[in-house]
Length: 158
Image (cartoon, rainbow, N blue to C red):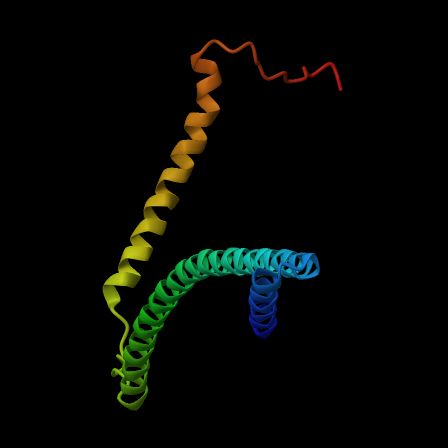
């Protein structure tokens, strides 16, 4: 900015001297100063445009980053909620286990007799049905006219 102010002061001085004296040397000087002012303003305008683009890029990336942060935050809050539920479930299970180990349920000294009778009954039914099933399996081929005939050697053949 200081350079621009110097150029403006130089332009003003040279222009006033040209108006008062009419010397063409001052006219060339203030025209050169005017061109320098235009170049400085153009360079400053390009800097402003560059900064404007940079700010727009920053704003758009900030919006995207902000949206990403919101997604991460919502995911993290879900993880915290799940972690709290898991912790509560763990504490409940631990309390149950601690209580059970401190006060175990009584073990029954006798075995229920009905279970033994049920097992014996099943084994007995199977043992009675097995010979019947083997005999039926032997007779079934003959019931359907099987060509299987047992061959007994006659007395003359050995």
